[in-house]
Amino acid sequence: MTVTHVLDLDAPDLKPFLTLRRPKFPFDQGLFVAEGPLVIERLLQTALKVRAVLCTPDQFERFRPALEIRSEIVVHVAERKAIEKVLGVEYHHGVMALGECPPEPDLKAVLAAAKPPRRLVALDGLVEADNVGVIVRSCAALGATALLSGETSCSPWLRRAVRNSMGGVFALPILHAPHLAEMLRRLRGEFGARIVGADPGGATALNAYRFPEHCCLVFGTEFTGLSAEVRAACDEFVAIPLAGGQDSLNVSAAAAVFLYQARFKA
Image (cartoon, rainbow, N blue to C red):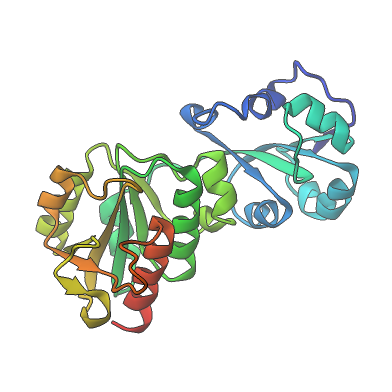
């Protein structure tokens, strides 16, 4: 661990923290930003490489034991107001970290290592990082095998997604599908998975649905649902029965309901 108590604006390790308003940075460089004490605590318990930590003095003392055994980390310590001035934002959790995204896992290896039942989740067109992060958190908490992020969805490694996953992103295999419909067809043809689309207009009610041992739950955009190509790759569509004249749930809430049902009511 290397510690600096002076914020050098030209320090290479700080540059990713200075561009928090660029949502795809630093993911486009194979890096991610994690923030918040609980998320950082979970990050430091993993084998993921952490390049830098930016924190207040009190958070430095909190994490000192964990940081001292990670010799590769550069730690920048400063008062909260100084950090806010550097970041250009008013709110700061007191600790942030810059880490390296893990290598993209292989789908076949992920499925081979997973114990049945194998329940994957696929995202089609989800552009709100907050929603993606909450879905990742539900996946990790409710036993999903892996998450497939389609080409029109934002990555679970974006800063707001990492934050809202509450560290779940560190515990779940994440695959970026360059062509989601094709990957869904591969799941069916090569691995025998049933492709289940979450759709408010689905013919089968979730409470009456019997989940197969190997399936992939597909969730569509927050605004228009599943794309036509992804719908064509689905075997069936399942809906959550709703009351009160409501026609849908927020996609992150719907994903949690589906995953709970798949785990405990299948």
